[in-house]
Length: 241
Image 1 (cartoon, rainbow, N blue to C red):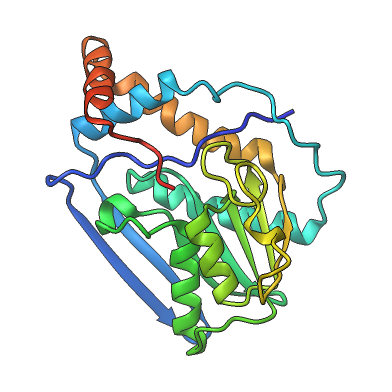
Image 2: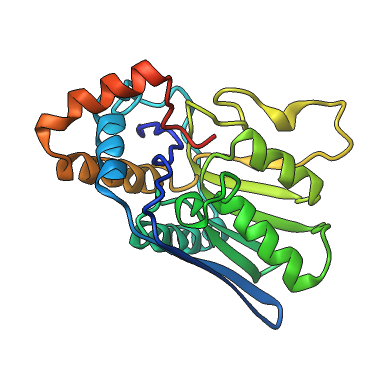
């Protein structure tokens, strides 16, 4: 069984230095970003990792019976995009948008470096794909993402007319594919997207847990309690959804 993990982003900071670039080449596009975490960001990440009660709990969802090789291949590309987010100091979530067997776009989570609360991996991939094909509608395309989409991303996925979503780790905090709400199950909506969850779930979840554990390890022990108490007084949240 796998370990569910929360889709979280570290607090913004005025001292974060960033650069975000959109590269479009023919029919492929990618979002890249560079961000440097401050000590306060790392401290908050450590407090989140050490206090989040969902880390380490078994999943309440049944395991995916057998993952097709095609889904494994594209999810592996999404994992590679997530590693770009990690390298930039962002929470490691990656996405790949494909049409048939062609990769149209990739994107990774970069709300800190982009100073953009909407800069989730799914949103980055959707924006890049729309630019690549010069159309805001992406019918027949599939989106692979390492973490269950939130409500914001679910809405954008439906507006883009994505045919199928495949995600890795479940998100018990903000997941909109059944973990918290199921945005795609509403029969009143004018577009219906097929959703498959839990593909390479253990691997995707391990990458997220590793990120938060390392952030916690970098935080000075003497500051952890104070950071948590300050967040409680101000009502600050660490989730990105």
